[in-house]
Image 1 (tube, one colour):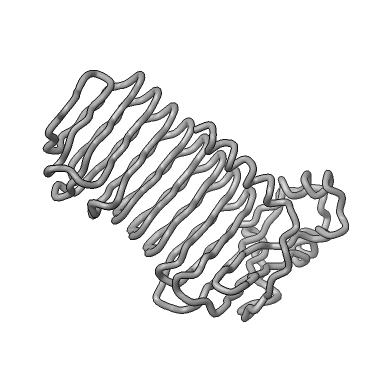
Image 2 (cartoon, helix red, strand yellow):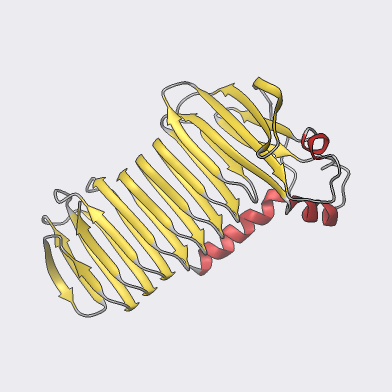
Length: 293
């Protein structure tokens, strides 16, 4: 847990650093953007991009929504708004934001440049940035590797095939109908995985972790961990797995056919259907439940 907090804290600090130059081979769908009095400015852009590429996006005070599709193209819609009441002309201010899709080989970075970001002091940029809201809706090719990070907001990934790395502070991470490898992290928020096939590493501090897995190969693994919260795992009853379950202050309950090697109030070790994939569940203050789908 300590390593996770250090690494993610460092990653958030890096959001403000200037990136190395990389190409901007984008096809703008709506370069000027649309205006809505409630939602602010909406900008859409797209870029041709193959399967098996790496896509990354970071934001603060903005949700991130991702889906995969069969097209060799990345589509991005940025929803931009601000809570800064000192701005007298909100529409003019929001028109100065610029969405960039920075492509370099099989890597693509999504970012939005704020007004006067090159000429504003760090202190003023930090204060203004805390009031700006930049959310993203993203479609990516199947079998992509997706890295998404946000602060004080949520991440949602639906109907996705590929590799997921998603992390948030003061928000939740939720996935539905995903296939591949998922690494999901939260601080002060929940992690929820529904309809997944493949390995999972789900971790949070001060939140619950819930997962429903319908397919798991013997070489796959599941690791779900929290400090203050419960863990709930639902599995297809045909999955072969080895279990290592531990809670310091809470109960363990299962209704799947386990052959136990060790079981007491706070620890359980055993196998399901003869053993196979490694499943590790751990919490400090909370219950752990394993149920059948």
